[in-house]
Length: 483
Image (cartoon, rainbow, N blue to C red; front, side, top):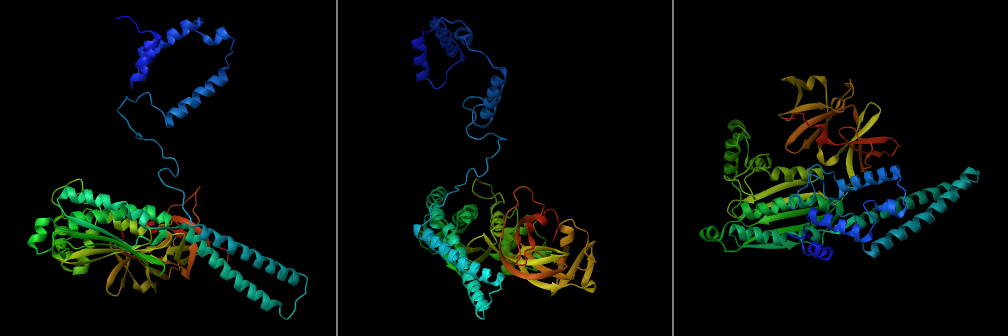
């Protein structure tokens, strides 16, 4: 076979998505021959080689190839997208931009101007006081300025928070197609309704809320509603209804996923949990109907006998509850056997401002999310009991483990831990002991980017100017049995 000419080679390259090494080498050899410069082009044209610059360029090429290009171990057509072991670039995969109404930005600008004017008045009063020119009305004026400044800062804070708020409809619009395809694959006739799409939520929470809602909506279609034949047998209409609704109540947003399907039976859930070994028969017999419904949030629970790509793997609602709790929210269930089920998510409008309870351990202040706190109780040595090597305490007939805050964070045991905080995290209740507490507050979390001790989610500053460490309860309890 005769070797291809230069023109023929380039035509083959353009026509084929894969270029062989033989063709490339032949084209390069012809190119050199046509220029009549031999093998070393740089020597013929008088260029000088700089070994240091060549080494730096080669290193840069290797680095770029590691991030973007094909590796020497890659096989054409075998790998598409990210490879195993590739590091994620910070923020990759998340939309970091926000569309903001110009009117909201105008409000922020107006409030900033008013704060500037109030600051000028405050500086004027400060100068008078420093110079000793104190008049009868000076302190009254100072009090009025401080009150006005406090109001303006609150309004500015509210206005800035509004710029982070986005309509939840931007999230809801992803689900109709998913529901339609899933219902079609399961042979079900489902009408999917969206209500309250204009309700607003912090943008960062919208991104973290997607996975829990996907689980709940898929569960409603897969587990909740019946097939057309089953609905006819039950005397229902052929078309089932799944509704996703959002509404604001105070400083929280409520999101409900409702279906008009078969509902849930507490006895069936109880027996299923026993079959899977999640609870014992003795424990199951003590549960009422409402507590039985909570069993569906246990890891590994599923009512499906066969594993499919949709369900039966025992992964789903436990992840939903965990993710909702990470957002300082809660999830409730209401069901009527034969009539349907409603899941209700309650979430704060934003995570930028967090209500916390401030605890004291020695001279250091710590904060725990107020949403996890059930009550504050006093602890005396007489109330503590040692069961199986663990400190426990009985509260209204319930035996609860007592966990020392000093032990959880690795400090020396405190001799005066006489305050206990009864906390609820998921299905676990426990008492967190500390030296004392300093009330509750709404704080802004400052993340620790360079150094973050275990169990610390971030820091804030108290009204006295002290540093307060905000605790990550999930991380603190990691590896510790609290049941």
